[in-house]
Length: 205
Image (cartoon, rainbow, N blue to C red):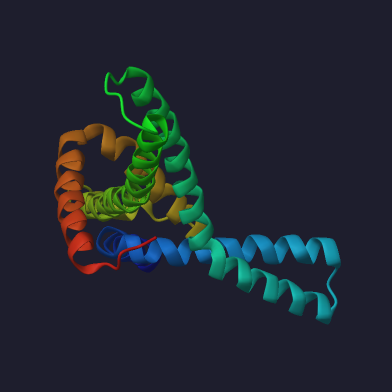
């Protein structure tokens, strides 16, 4: 039973962190993923010597530090391209006639779309992390309340069997049988999480 309650407790804690601090933690997660990926890539190419590990660690650290900047640049480029296309379309549809009309439309649209792309990135991260965190909190709570009389049935011989069995039960039969409760609880926590993240989290990317 200790494994069962421990697993559910970890899921709930991670859910709360994702729901209310998701935007801040997302940056850390991206940085950690960039470090691991670059470190593994350099090690696999260079070998396992001490100097190679040091070089791989430094390369991974640089990748982690630049990961947020690279994502922001990539999203901005997408916004600029969209703005360029929109500016061209507006110039073709416009009935106004003034000097440098096409360039003016393109510049204005590029600035607007580029800024909106970055703002939309932060908003999407906030919404997704709040929704994911909300579901991670609701599921274990539903399982503890609705399956209280059958908790012992989920305990396996090994910790791995217990975790696998509980996960299967929560994501399968439990959600299917109580979809409205799951959706309502997730929606409420998602909205609260979005509000809290906007008010308390850093600006993000």
